[in-house]
Image: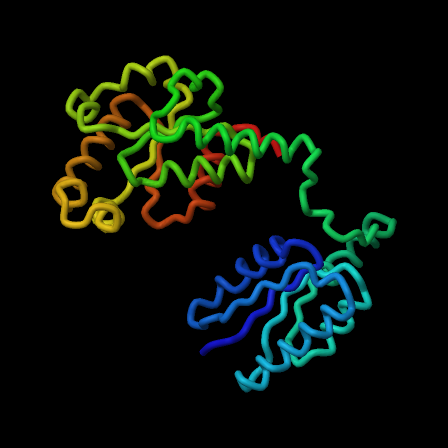
Length: 271
């Protein structure tokens, strides 16, 4: 089955898309044709969107799913009159929350969007820059500033996880790749010994690692299954020897890896 989906927002669409994708992920047997429609903040934009939604309904022969975070009541009414099935996120939750809090919402557009001047936004941007600077063992002299140092074999998910931790949570995350020399010695690299309490290991199933490396260097020793099996085995031995907490990233998204790291380490977020 294929269903059209419209994530609609009067701001960036990040909230509608994030919550919507979480809901849709529970229906694995359906293919969703997704459309993100940000900045639907005027009546004529809403009317034009309704035309596209109705066209999709005609082409599909069934109602498109509309997941919206529209604040303006007039715009919400226009979208609700389309041929789509509407899930109004703000409309569903603001009214009962107003009743519980005993006050009215400000109904302000873009409240979930960070402002460039805010401290939290600044923290996140600085953390992203830090992750880029300290990527793949670079700038070891900056490890004193790290909240966490991800440690694992090449292509085990270190870089994207560091960037996500920075962008989403403002966490200063560095990463260091375990080299063949490190594996042969089974000792922590000298640069990491003073920061052992910040180390967190990422491991991965050898078959998955080989597939990922094939995309980068096909038919090479680096991507061969034998090499991947050997590296993962030795890396896991090193992590156990030095008592470094680790997780296997094979079946987890970057978001899930980051959440599990935070759950294990209890690092404070800067957001």
